[in-house]
Amino acid sequence: MSRGYTADSHRQGRVQTLTSLEQARRIAALALEKLADDVVILDMRPECSFTDYFVIATGRNQRQTASIWDEVHTRLKQEQRLLPQGVDGTREGAWIVADYLDVVLHVFTPEARAYYRLEELWGDVPAVDVDAAAV
Image 1 (cartoon, rainbow, N blue to C red):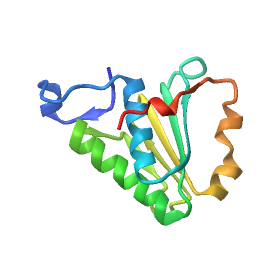
Image 2: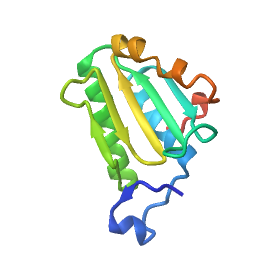
Image 3: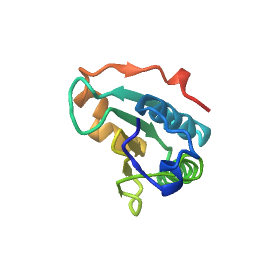
């Protein structure tokens, strides 16, 4: 069950709750709908306690990173009544981070992704099949 912040109607059972894996796959699918490149889901459960999954995506430029983030935010809010606990980087757009507690979304420009290299930093964690992402 997702631990992200939800509206009251969600708690009353009108919206089906996604598991953390389903949430990660939904976020990946939404990023892909906005033509994100190199979308990766990392299973963080073996290595950290603050989240279950990272979803990492690349936009070609700051405008596209903002568009990817806007789509994920809007659709999760509408469909699941799910809001992030915190968001950072929306003004600059080079690295947007949205913390949904169970899932943390990272949207990078190509330059920022190459610089921070999260996949290398967390190289010991398994990747999840993005092709199974729920659309």
